[in-house]
Image (cartoon, rainbow over all chains, first blue to last red; front, side):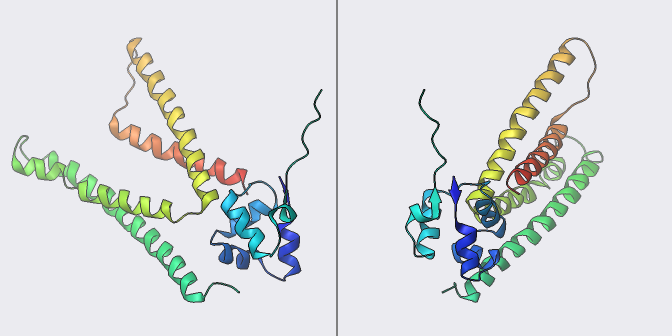
Length: 69
Length: 138
């Protein structure tokens, strides 16, 4: 899953630690989400979207589905 | 906008306190385990003294379990996944190792392995699993 968490965070001038504190997770988790190594759970994804005042689709985008043969 | 600093300090302080507690209890656990083995070699088997010596590390085992459980509960969802992956790695690896050793023993070869070794093997392989899980999401 692709996401715009890093863009939204830096646009607000927040560090990863600030975002982690706000979300109640570790800085490593924020880093893993931003580098797309970890997909957050639905509640955490909603929390992120709500924090940035965006819809969840604005923040997270699923990978392109493989074409049906 | 951000949560107040008191809440952050409380959560962070709690984690540090639990980690320090866990380390000191682990130290006490090792010390009392050695003391227990030392005493068991010196007291008569089947007596109250030998039973008390054998049970000496038990409170520390329980305290260690409680603190470890509290620490895991304080982790976030990704850290919980890492813990799960570490366990999912450690359990089958240790089982395969133990079953293989058992079969080798059945084949007539002497392999020294007891319950204390199982505990150490599980801890070591779990640490390796935790390292792999940590690296995966780094």
